[in-house]
Image (cartoon, rainbow, N blue to C red; front, side, top):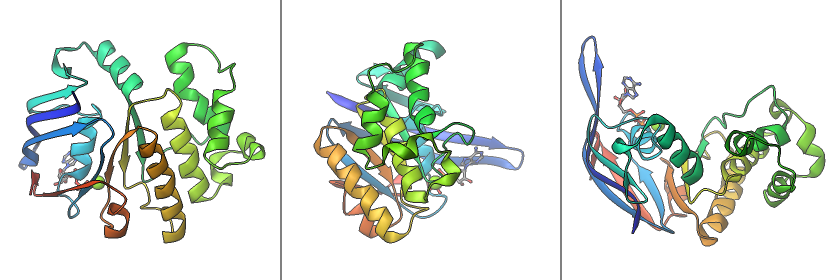
Length: 221
Ligand code: ADP
Ligand code: MG
């Protein structure tokens, strides 16, 4: 079964000056264990495609299936649950919550899902697995380097053990050496079974994927 399937998906933004077709009739199937790089020029629809796959945004036309479920048939609560259980997001700007410590950032999605604190030490274990030291756990994100912040963001994305990781330019704010370290981390997560869909415009970074999808003017090439 495909973990993700898009059938004729379009996303049209209705603006005062007219319609912007960000995605045009995109069909795409993604299998479990895949590692896909989405490439294309700025404004071509890469983030829109990723947001659609992650149900952060909904198609204007067409259908999106996650684990075989047509997401348009789900209520908002069901969709939130499905997304929370299935998908982890990683962003270029890390998007950590500045007022929370590293540990609290990682624990946050766990608390949202289970309505209790992590008593089994899962968060500490993940922080360790991401190559961060215990002492960093109590720091705020702005006290960390970019590479460290992205590792925290990856730990947070993994805390509820999602099948799929969606990464929007995960190395875009990192120097090339740190970016490659983050890619090694993503590669090992893919080898452990995570399906990864990553947006990048860096050819070197895209080489980590198994399949490259090129998009231009909202259409897959
Ligand atoms: P990329 O990530 O490839 O740079 P995006 O997916 O962000 O491209 O954007 C694709 C197109 O959709 C662009 O023309 C962009 O201006 C437009 N767009 C994206 N998000 C919005 C939005 N929220 N409102 C209006 N237009 C948008
Ligand atoms: Mg983008």
